[in-house]
Amino acid sequence: MNVELNKNLKLLLNLEELALFISSVILFGIITEFSWWVYAMLFFLPDLSFAAYLVNTKFGSWIYNTLHHKGLMTGLTLVGYFTEIEWLLVVGIVFFGHASFDRVFGYGLKFPDHFKHTHLGMIEK
Image (tube, rainbow, N blue to C red; front, side):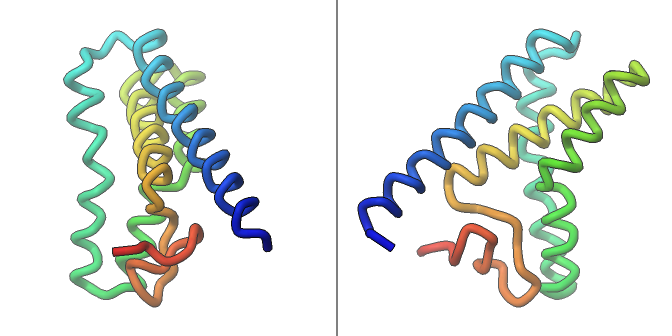
């Protein structure tokens, strides 16, 4: 594949993820009654999944992927919205935003063989 095309595609995907992150921040502000400190506190919570790698890489990747899966977070957001359970709505929105933010920096869903092996490729040093 053309290297220039590859760079352009990577930029396009990063801009898309950035837009999704910004959308989660806006959505949080529009449809929840929670304070912004709650968004900030919850934003880094999915990164605690790194601790699961202390067990082994298979378990670590499963926990990490569960907490960074945007489809799952979209579902959680919808369940929270339609059941009017605001804390589910908030967790879904914030975790979705976190996953998008991570992907801007190349942290994708993990393969079970190594933490640095993601669906976006290998994480560079």
